[in-house]
Image (cartoon, rainbow, N blue to C red):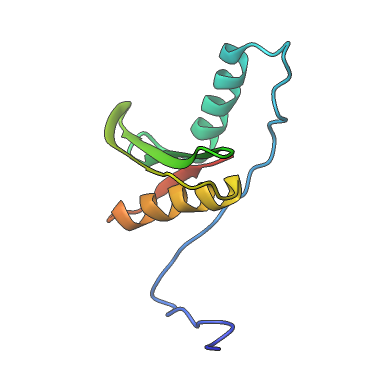
Length: 116
């Protein structure tokens, strides 16, 4: 069964900010408006030195499941990775897989993670 809670040393300082300000875009929403809103949120919570990681997961029923992430720093893409499976699973599983894979790659802090 294992431990329900794992104590974290006080020498590790991490903070999590959850922002849920953007509604799912409707068909009438322009992609440029949504992109501008996302970039404004990134600007509010990060510095130019921070790494910004975008993650996504998807499922095509009865076909495949996939995950991907892209990281940028100082306005340039520094890492892209993705993976796919020939079986379908839940989209939430692929979303978590994208975040997990990006965290395994990261060796730096701070970082801003964006996921839907």
